[in-house]
Length: 156
Image (tube, rainbow, N blue to C red):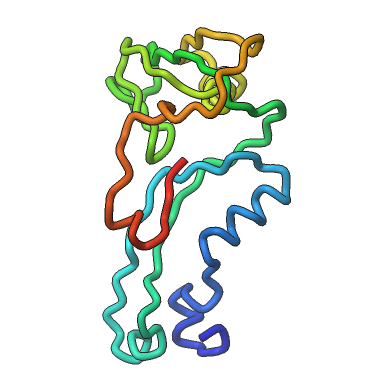
């Protein structure tokens, strides 16, 4: 598929397995890659469908961060509003949607992403890194869709 000019021209011939992309991102210094959106790529060309077989292609948008000290400490984040494209809710990634003025429990990684990046002026983050609460499974405001779980896809 990588050498087929039609498949390559459709930007499918050079596609990466999503876990490989995450490994490459981490190796380049981007810790804790976050999926913002993921859409199935519909293939209508019969020749490409035949070559793809049972492969499903996705268009995935990530947020990547070069932050140090990421850990699972418990915090609370409150979206204060102010982002023009997100007047009432802000979607950090596929698993984290913040409603204005509504406190949300987040892990230390998410707390740093909100307090040490361009989003810092729009959030109040409460909590510190003095006490570790272990794995912070409550750091998500959205449930993972069952069909993605069955395909081996996960959101952080």
